[in-house]
Image 1: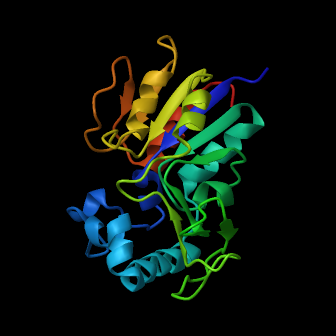
Image 2: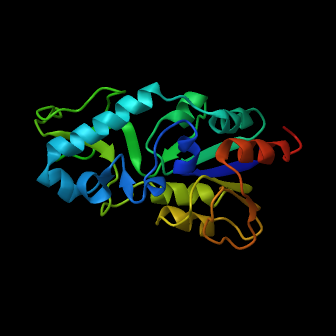
Image 3: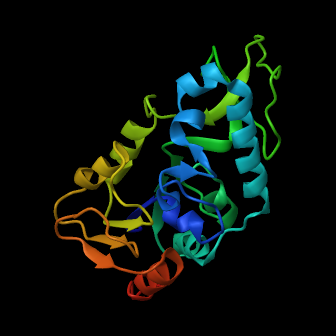
Length: 227
């Protein structure tokens, strides 16, 4: 049976593909406060602004490419079972070739009904406009978990984390919950490595590689020995 590597990724891994991050912009995301574009209240107050914001993010994503870190994690599947648990809403892990990706905070390339949340549609990089509706006639919204909303995939991710033989954390400050709590789901004897050039939250027993995602993942993969 292949060893199971569980990887928790955050905005830092996508930043090296040119996608801007909330953390690195002083609390602003492309000049917008999170409270203006990433809450249910914001969508109720100004749906046109929120839709335009995510349409811009989707267009930006279409022009981005997976980087070396994404590709290395995908290539690990040749020798290991690899589960990616990502806080990112982009599709760069999938485009790099990773086959098991759990999106905690939703997916930018999907839309869902405002009234029937189980109605989710693949839209690729197309915009969502006011007047675009689900099959039942309700307005579509981004398939994104906004601040103040439940994280429906967190229990699935926790179940996966509990089966890890190794845990690798890339590009996240470990300050956003419930995602950060996944660290505590792995068995105590499971090796944990954190790759982040900044100052990630303290993780007991973790090895820390203070590098960006691409260089850090390359160093970590080289140390696996059997890859």
